[in-house]
Length: 226
Ligand code: 5RP
Image 1 (tube, protein in one colour):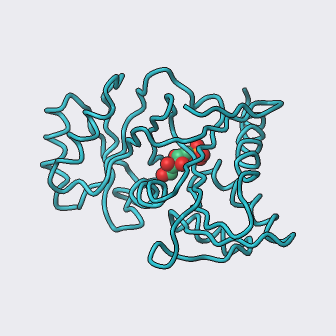
Image 2 (cartoon, helix red, strand yellow):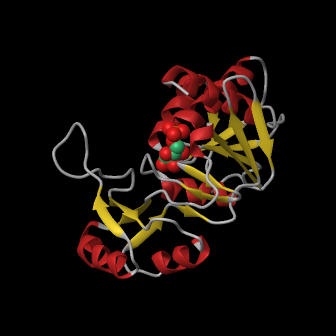
Image 3 (spheres, rainbow, N blue to C red):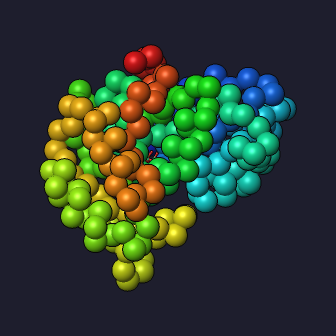
């Protein structure tokens, strides 16, 4: 799958998930390039008269929603009917997220939603999760969490910014450690261990999270309920 085929697959997945959105719904707006296709498709539906409100999961999602004319709201005001979000890896209902460093807000919004629809291209599918897990940490907790992740069997790597010297700083003002644990046959156990570390704001393991997965291909979309 070359880059343009992959982009088309992401677009198909995003557009497919948006078909589940109904008039009057509050929709969680995911982050990343695949979720962006869904937000753009939802914006087109709003242009054609669909009445929805969106809860963004990141600066990027908020900006795109404003650009495409989707009315915004918050979890203080509305409950979320449906969230549409991307993933870095999908194994059944389990996900690794946080490639964009937005997994803390994504987890808040996605888990608040009645249903989470995950949008992906085929490169994201796996039998067992083995993608490095992004762990958002308070800046003061970087060193102890780095040590603790090593004790859990992971290899932590501070995420570096590309157009700035130094680390990536999240929308919440924190740092991200990308932690490679190899294959993770027990994501629930690892998720609990990571969540228990002082200074960890949120990690990118989304256990039993997906209600529906839309995988775009070069020609179609496969939808499954894990
Ligand atoms: C951001 C995320 C994204 O959903 C994930 O990284 C997938 O992104 P893309 O659709 O661009 O591959 O979790 O924090």
